Image (cartoon, rainbow, N blue to C red; front, side, top):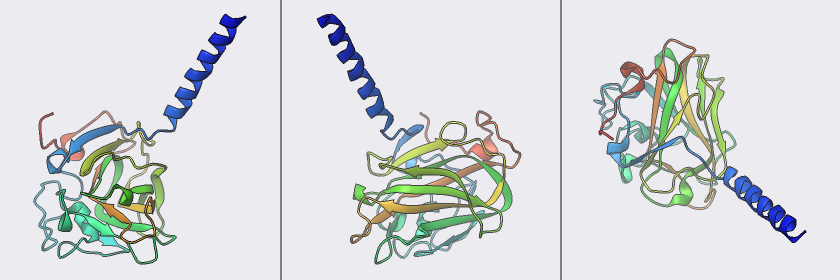
Length: 231
């Protein structure tokens, strides 16, 4: 009888361990830390030749509901500057009074429609409590009505600063059957919201295919970008 109870207890321990692990944040792939870990060649800047100081050379029009602009400060468009670092290389730090109901969002508008095949979001250089914990990536074709593509509500994905995390269709969200000409990232909460400087993002990269539905294993150079460093 004792053996049976011991075995039953062992099974329960394993079950609790599995349940506990299932609640942990699981990212498809951590690419590394720093600018060299960005994939590069995303839809906003396929040639990686954008000039953030002048907002020139990008293949997208950017907008945001908080601190729109590049350079000169920790403004929203810095998430598309192809650089990871402090100050002008990140978006920080949120509106006074906390995140509004609509969230803090930054949007990239394109001339063509793309099905989102994968994207990266990177942490900034300091203060982990500012990382998004409730956030979405959304798509639209009129810039007004947005559909949720990816949603997260839980702990932060990032365990290091300037860390690049990859999310892929078919792995982390549904393979997309609709193309969109607008993609936006929306943050609804952080661990430190609404106290002080409570929000920041280092970088965002969007990748897509203009023929869909998309096979996420078909990583074409023209739409899946290029790896800046050999891994």
